[in-house]
Every structure is written in C-alpha cells, then in structure tokens.
Amino acid sequence: MTLFKKLIVTTAAAIALMSGSASAESVKIALVVKTLGNGFFDAAHKAAQEAAKELGDVEIIYTGPTTSTAKAQIDVVNSLIAQKVDAIAISANDKDALVPALKKAMQRGITVISWDSGVAPEGRLMHLNPSSNPLIGNMCVKLASDGLGSEKGDVAILSAASTATNQNIWIEEMKKVLPNYANVNLVDTVYGDDLADKSYRETQGLIAKYPNLKAIIAPTSVGIVAAAQAVEDAGLVGKVNVTGLGLPSEMAGHVKAGSSKAFAIWNPIDLGYSATYIAYELKAGKAEAKPDAEISIGRMGKIKLDANNEAAMADPFVYDAGNVEEFAKIF
Image 1 (cartoon, rainbow, N blue to C red):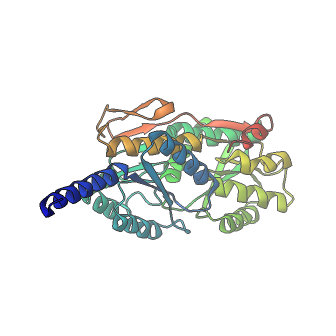
Image 2 (cartoon, helix red, strand yellow):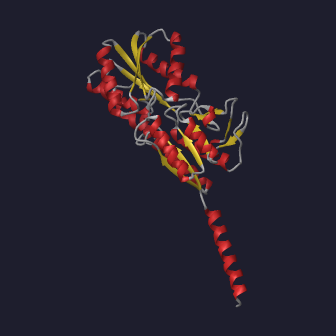
C-alpha cells in the first residue's frame, strides 16, 4: 500500500471513530435541587433516571448544595457551566438571586428550565409547577381547619427558607383563603431553612410562644417531619396537629403516632420524570418554550405552557391513616 493510500485509510478510520463517538455522546441534563439528602428530591432523581433510560441518550447529573441558600446553588450552577452540561433543570432557593448565573448558562448554550420552585422568567425558558399554587395554598389551610373541627384555634406556619420561591407563593395563597376558614387563627410564620434541626427548634419556639397553639402547617417535606417529631417529644399529640406537605414514607410513622391527622403532596416521581423530558425536548429542538406551546412528557402525556411559559402538574393528594401505609411503599 502506498503512503498516500495509507493516509486515506487512516484518515477515514479516524473520521469514522470520531463520528461514532459523537453519535454516542449523551445529552447531559443536570437536575439541580434545593438541598441534597431530601427524600422528595431523591424520589424525583430516581424518576429522572427512569426518563433518561426511556430517552436512551441522556445522562442525569444529580446535584445541589448541602445548605438551602442561593449562594450555594449559584456555586453549583457555575460548576455546571464549567462542565458544559447540555441542560439544567433547577428547583430554586431564590427566584431572583439565581437569575444572573442562569442567564450566563443560557448564553453559553445551556437549556435552562425550573421545576418545583421557580426562577424569574428572565432566568429560564419555562417553569413546571408541581400543582396549581392556589389549590396548594387552599389545601394546606383546609387540612388545618379540618383538623380543628368545630373548634377555633391558633395556627402557625413553619416554612423552608425565607427566600424559597414556592413556599412564599403558597403562604400568600394560604393568607388569601383565611377568610373562608373562620376556625383558623394564623398567629405566626417561622422558617426552618429546610434543615431538620432548625425546623425542630423553630417548632419548639412556636409551642413555647403560643400556649393555645392547635395546628402547625409546614409546606415543606423536611419541616413537617421535624414539627411532628417535636410535637411528639413535647407530649402534645392530640393537642397540636401537624399538617402541610410531606412524603408518605417519612410521615407514615407520625400519622400512626397521631401527631399528624392528614397531609398532602403531589407525586415527586412524576415531577422529576416530567422535568427531565421537558429539558430533553427543548434541548433537542423537538419543542419550543413559548405561550400555548405543547411539550411531550413521556408517559405523563403533554403539558401546555401559559402566557408566562409555565405549566402545572396534578392537584395535591391527601394522605391519612387510611392510605398512608400503602403509599409509603412507593415514595
């Protein structure tokens, strides 16, 4: 074989090898959560892996900070920009503070969406709400009211971080419907920063400050568990009811103990699955983030974006002693 022919063969082989590597390269989707070690987000991560397996050429990078602060999440986003991921799907600790870092990501060609806890519109292409915000707010107050029965009582809210986008929206929605629930007297709102120990201490503070406290609403899967445990440890089961948003697997024991009569949550599995599909569809150019656009989300069907490029999943579902054990086996 002549030198010229050898060069042709070698070059052709190299091109074929490069082409094969390129076609086999996965779409890297970063699932960024508020904090690691949270059961809700762990369930969403498993579902993201399910979606990635169905899509076939997707690699999930599951990441987030260990503290629920905007700064810690910004550091995570900057690291992902340096890694040149293809897409970022983020549940935000602060809707505004993350915008500059996420805008930088989009300028570098990274597809950015928010899910669960939103980002301001200029920092993402679209947002996936877990449910309708008004329905979530109303559900939380209704659960507290139902627990009180005919009795009127003092009720407090134990939230996550004071900057958490979704919790702040839900609290505003709760306050809007208070006139519809005459037996609910909202006395305070405190913040546990989605940390179990701080949420526990904040609950202790509420118990000490309000001797007539009858219910605690915790719209956070970390806070509701901590509050229920604090009520049990204080010997107040039957006197203070803990409700809000939680995971069946983490709340089943507290429902059985009586510190929580009922709570609600949407399905984190469907949420993580759908967020992954949306990020992929947008990155692949199979869908466009614009008002009235429809985006395929696999087994979940399709979502339709509203005028703000937002879409919502299903209504919250209520768990109590009659069904919590069954669902605790799932998430």
